[in-house]
Amino acid sequence: MTDHPTAQRVQADSPTPDPTDGTETSTSLTNGVDTGPSATVGAGTSTSTTVGAPSRTSAAPDPVFTTSAVVASCVGFMLIGALQAFYGPAIPALREEFGLSPSAAGLGLSAHFVGGVAGVLLFDRLYGRTGNRRILAASYLLMAVGSAGFAVAPNWPLALAAALLAGFGFGGIDYGLNQLFAVGFGHRSTAMLNVLNAHFGIGAILGPVLIGVVGAEHYPVVFVVFALANLPLLFCLRGVRDSPPRLPQPSRHATTAGAATPADRALRSVLAVFVTLYVLHVGIEAGVGGWEPTHLETVGHSAGVAATATSVYWLMMTVGRFLAAPIALRFSAQTIITVSCAGMTVCLLLASVPDLAPFAYAGVGLFIAPIFPTGLPWLHRAAPHARRAGAVVIAASMTGGVAAGPALGKVIEWSGVRAVPLLLAAVSAVCLAATLWLTRATRPNPAK
Image (cartoon, rainbow, N blue to C red; front, side):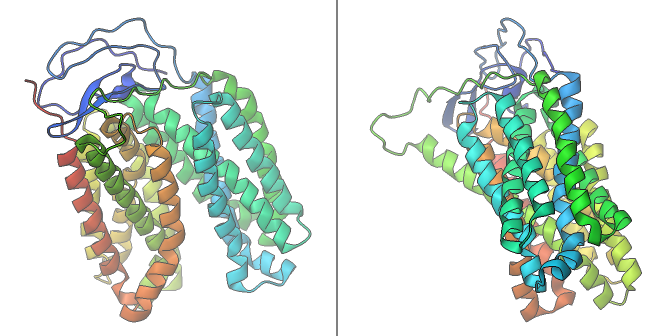
């Protein structure tokens, strides 16, 4: 499943060469600033590539994933999508069993996300020091133990502790597989990341359906079955390349005195804007999912139409990622994300028209879909020697999802529910501006 591209000449006006194809490249972070060489997980080759000059490729790299490991990874993402979606439909039963208020019952999902952020940051510390298989195996086991513990917890504090533990495993899988897919498939990494994250959407759609079929009062059975479903994936980890990545060497222009160089400042700026893009677009994703039903009912649609339209929104997000996979093989990440942010902004503006709102929200799901998975390979190309960049933006995206609900709720208290699409459109416009800035800042220098 791993791509082995042949040596080729990179034109001066082409996108930045993809460092995930198994080559080590010297690329430009921003005009006039050299970011130094890069290295990737998905390859075992080393080449010296200059923009505008042919590359020299040595031995073919070992693949990061076998076919069976790719399939198992997609199943793993379905599981983490389902786990995240289990908590909401289980709230009525949790309130009855533990005597909780609505806000207290909602702490289950909050604990899950807190664990997820901690898991991303923890496993990032281990990434490159511990074998990939061990990291992923520990993550699956933590999800399994945490989910089983949530099912059998005798009181709410222990249930929250179990949700936190499951969240640790969730974060490890989310970070670990996104990181490996981002660098493990050469020029196909963006396409494969969209396929991987589309399976998260499948799990998020099926999770509430499963709770609905068995009944919320039987949520412990669902969580136990989920825990058991993680275990067979451990046997598929043999198909994951275990060797840690070769970390990039410091830039030849880096100083040893600790002073900030222009390259350091440019890198920090790029990372800050990437974090902003991820926090805001995930905030829009969560904001639409949380407030779409209320907005549609407020502007005159029935509760049934509102619920159906919200389901369609999540479905279109999943469909959008599958559709983005072949598109990513022909167009750059910059182009895809720019079009996505522009389309998302237009659809949110159209959602302020009551008759168009259900269809416009479906369009938002379609356009927002590729942003998260498509941005990760772009980030790796823009900041190849910033090893922790992927962990920072993934953790930031989770934070955006947690903060979106309360933050948007406070603004809505002031502006009213009818303003929801306009508020989100303003945030989407900021995402578009961030994308345009990143496109300019990460454009490669012409060959000299």
